[in-house]
Length: 409
Image 1 (cartoon, rainbow, N blue to C red):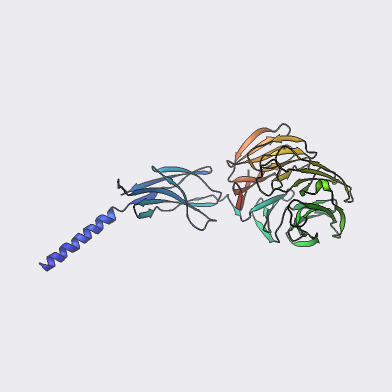
Image 2 (cartoon, rainbow, N blue to C red; image 1 turned 180 degrees about the vertical axis):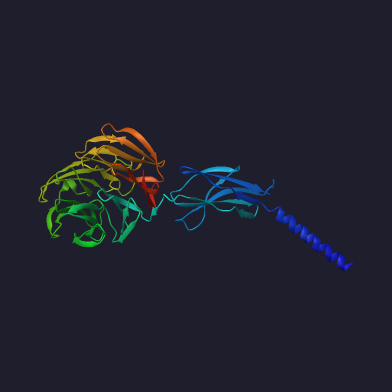
């Protein structure tokens, strides 16, 4: 009798366990279906039944630059379409919750070998067209030389930096990097330091012309007062010092025109996507061939401008600035407005405008008519042309992010 009772209890426990195992909720994720920058997910739920304690299903995702899975969104039904993040490897799994019980599906991956992320939070990009190389700048002090055909990179770390320049001096390519410690550091094309010039106060920008380095440096702790200084590239000596009340707030300068004696400038924007109309100022400077100041023109336009998004055309005759995409001549004549942009490129005949929907729109410069729209993997930040291909340097997120992606279009 005792034996029979024990046998009955054992069988009852075994049957209960089997029943519990068989009824445990499950979710399976099928193979992913890739279409452009989107992916379709299909899943099957088993043993969830119509229980009152059913909670729901959600999508989780992980990329090669993220430490773990993150929640994407809750879903219903058994299918969903998701926009792929800017990453080479993206892993998906489904999460099923029934009451206090949670289970996960198997992991499915999308691998796109054409996407190679570079660990740079972009401040600026310079393009060496002759050698088909990009120089990517992170404000923290990282400089990355990127070989466009191969994707190979060389990295140099320096002090916190602002807006640099790339030019040929005495037949050699040089990179001029303004630093917040008050120096302009000069590198060769292999990112080897070859010289430095001590300006003495935080340097915001530098532009090379005719053997001289034109710099803007901050005065005191203010981000709205700057001094323009000119230095001899060979000797490092101060050539001229412009302290003009008309241009006291010019923060960023770039070469303009083909004379070698003209610069354009803009005042400082403390937000990458400043869209206000307040206190915007544009500048045009004239210098002699010996680096001495001649004149300055200041304009306070009714359209937005932004020093963090400031691109000059290849021939130096015009520039585009701000998320509003305002195009100006060097004399500050307003030519066009290209709205809703994340970044720009501007050669002599084409304007390239990055869009918030991860596309690149191409405009014909003489009349600014839209002639082409191209899908991109990310948000175009700087765009260049090698004469045949379009080279788009994209950020992962609308407001930059810690990585970027170079895409050949």
